[in-house]
Length: 101
Image (cartoon, rainbow, N blue to C red; front, side, top):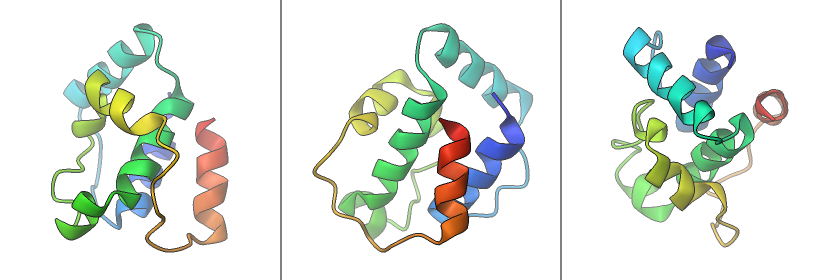
């Protein structure tokens, strides 16, 4: 997994300014991939959580890099199809999403 791309994608998806991903979190993402989860699923979980009304209302307070290392959260958000978008994303966001696939 390219953690620079992941960090940029996360920051742009949630309009955050996380400066880096620490080694503990990197290990958790690698463990998630070892369990059989894909980069695409992780990216989709982030995108879908960004459209979730609860997370919008809480200003993404609980959407952290660590949050998406949890398999139950990836399971919950990766395959949602009924999530209403909060707003359209710029072209760069779509490009980053394609890189995570």
